[in-house]
Image (cartoon, rainbow, N blue to C red; front, side, top):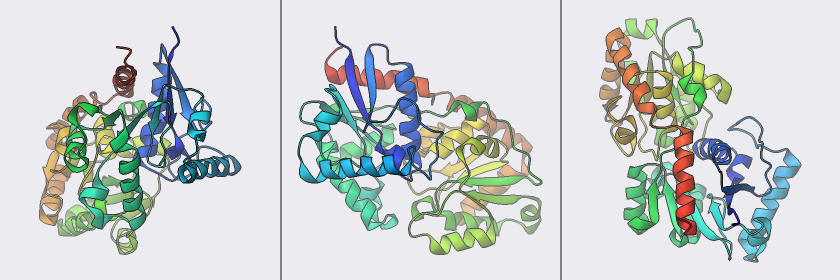
Length: 364
């Protein structure tokens, strides 16, 4: 019997990206490691082994990257059948959000990471909104099956896009082993930590406002560290982060587990998340988590974090003060977070994803 052949669209590995790139990089590796009777390939023409994960740069050299984007542009704009040619007869093509044309022969699937461009367009660029709406119309609404990275995201897709419930399954993303094994990177002072792109949805202005509300003595004892690149609509916030916190800029992936594990508090007051990689990673690393009471975050943290109203600087500040001043609370949150994070293993994600693909192919 011929193996089931699945082509994974890995074009996100060629662009500057955070959560989606993290997902595809780890997911592909674990799908291949557990594939068994399923043959996994990476589109377009990506080898089995990639460079180390770098959110700021392509996994390929510049000439190779340009050539692949030219191919994708040709596919998207002409509607001719090169998608079928380049996936070499795959039974299933799993698209990501740079694709606008589906193959004609393979069954189409995709992952829904979040619906923020539909639910909160004011925090996105016009380009992001246009791209997500085109992707939803061309791919998501036509797919034979979809993966949602949380149950909250699944319900959003059903409600916002009108996806039939039976066509979308929640499969949690995973956390890299390095976070479960992390040891704190020494720093001169205790610190609260935020990790993520500086852009409106992440709500960093409210975090800076909350930090300013803390007693001066506590702020003298502890630093607020902000790690992540500047994104869109963020010029004023970026300037504030540099003035009012210790701004680290983009931190290489290899350095993040130790930085996260050393945090006295990991604070993430996002306005909406589809899965919330930084929060899940912080729990795995044993950092006490403070995060928002919205979207998927109560689901992902599962009672292992302090939940706050992200629009209330006083609530964020109060939670920070409680955690930073109580060793017992930090230890309790760390223990509960580590236990909860065990649910988010890439091996589990890959196993459930392979079951999903077999179901789509009708082989089970």
